[in-house]
Image (cartoon, rainbow, N blue to C red; front, side, top):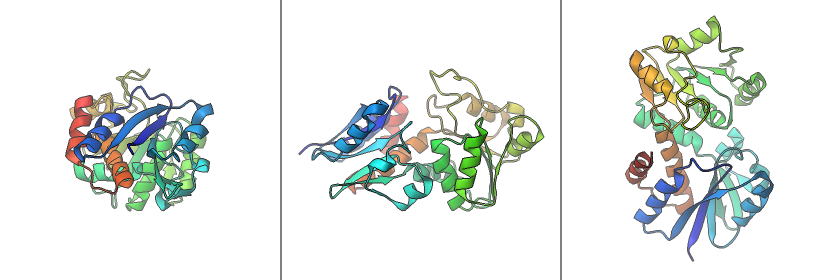
Length: 279
């Protein structure tokens, strides 16, 4: 029977996941179709429950539902439970099991594409939303020296810091003043986990930090993948810093999802090429 997996989120017009996931299924000769399941909030429970149907294998989950789907699942793996967010659902023996491949995708992109080992490094992260949860968890597990965290919503930042449960996580109270400036300029790794700079958004071509704060010694990592080179990355490159965009993280988390659904090695090169061409 032909199988289907889908992406659950709202809205979904921006997603390129079907492009590179379908290319992978086709390359491997798998009779699986990847679809967009744009889901308004009142339909979320029905859409998740429908994954139990015989023609469904699982799903990806994106904003704003990575936390909302958890009560609708039968099990979580250890990583998803630790992060408190799910981006991949796999049907196993009629049970729906939640995983989080964002953390794996982030670290793999950081190490493979960014040539950066986070062990013992200082990190400043802007944003404390869903993707920041996964990234923060991955960084703590990777043995970073410290994490400076800022979000315009102080309560959200404080909550994330508490849930990461590490003594070396500090919340910045403002994105103005010497504390923020020193955290940004002194970071081995500076990460934007907000949508600032995203194409077709109100903040397109905007950077979350001023160029003069960026250090030539930092790796600047923007999780925004469209455009491929955000304003933040442009400014960082002009300053002489190394940069890494969000496209590789998107693909690598998709690689991990593919392998969970199929139990086969994903054709990474094809997925990366298709994602780049889609943008």
